[in-house]
Amino acid sequence: MKMKEEQFRLIQAQLKKLMSQDGFYRKKFEGINPDSIQSQEDFEQLPFTWKGDLRDAYPLGLQAVPNEQIVRIHSSSGTTGTPVIIPYTRKDVSDWALMFKRCYEMAGVTAADRIQITPGYGLWTAGIGFQAGAELLGAMAIPMGPGNTDKQLRMMMDLKTTVLTATSSYALLLAEEIARRGIIDQIHLTKGIIGSERWGEKMRRRIAAELGVQLYDIYGLTEVYGPGIGMSCEYECGMHYWDDYIYCEIIDPKTGKLVPDGQIGELVITTLRKEGAPLIRYRTHDLTRFLPGDCKCGSPYPRIDTLIGRTDDMTKVKGVNIFPSQIDELLRDIPGASSEYQVMIDHLNGKDLMTLFVEAEPGVDRQALGATIGMTFKMKIGISISVKPVAIGELPRSEKKSTRIFDNRY
Ligand code: ZN
Image (cartoon, rainbow, N blue to C red; front, top):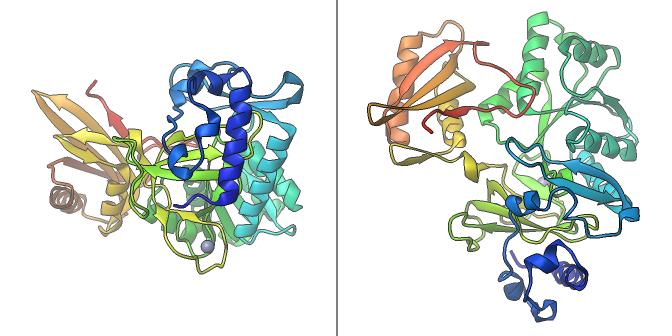
């Protein structure tokens, strides 16, 4: 992707500012003269920023403005080790709300809508981002946070919620619960906005069908504001991202070199206007690609594809790289298999052993289904696995991002 002149100007100004003051980037970019960055090619020589760098800066080493200008912090939900703390200025907070408002508008949400917010509040950026955007738009926010399904459904019915915001697994849980209780005629949802974890087409179709809504993907990460920096439109062809706030690159995660436009790689983000904790060439670990050409919706904002996976989701079994998205795709095309699955990987008697647990639709011959999936897996992905079909609802649903692959080898 060609860097726009305005983007380059913002990056150059940001680099100059960061290098002129003590702090994270002056240390990280020691020896680099910001005046020597005169082109996109020069910029592409700058080193990447890694999540580990951010962890090392704990607690407030990333802060790039005086204390008085910081109005809030958020923290990324790291599963292990030291958290990452991101400080926000007043302008960061309002820029984020503005981007979030754009996301709602991209989904056709208006001030007349009632938005039920089920992602968590607190240190995590999710809930409060959805809320600030909704309020800026003028819609009615219903700040539920996660959990308490009874209360969620009651509010959804009594307040006539029109927009549900959730993780895909929680949306699925609510959809199943609505079907089980037979209350779909009391639900007024028209749209679902689903957080940016990678989720399969089959799950998407199920949630959309059971809730009777159109679904939208929203993208973001705590290190770069939070959710709200990108959003799918009604044509469901990737996600538009706000290129006046972020500059995106796609690189080969192994070599760090840019991949040709259209090829899958790791998304790298540079913030253009962030004050509290600007980031230069931040490696997101999200796998996606640029989608070329104009979108049918007419939006001038460029697009990245729906997330394909995480660079660290990639698992090697019997010498073959496996992404969860490949399994989603494979199951999508097999009648009788649901979208819910879990993978266990073990090492027994000197050999990798992969077991795929998958929920079978009611009435399906599970033995035959297992055989079909096993055969297809061998054909498409190239390794033999053991398949264990189970009943719908037997695999755990979570309100957080779903973990599907459990590697017990190490
Ligand atoms: Zn579009």
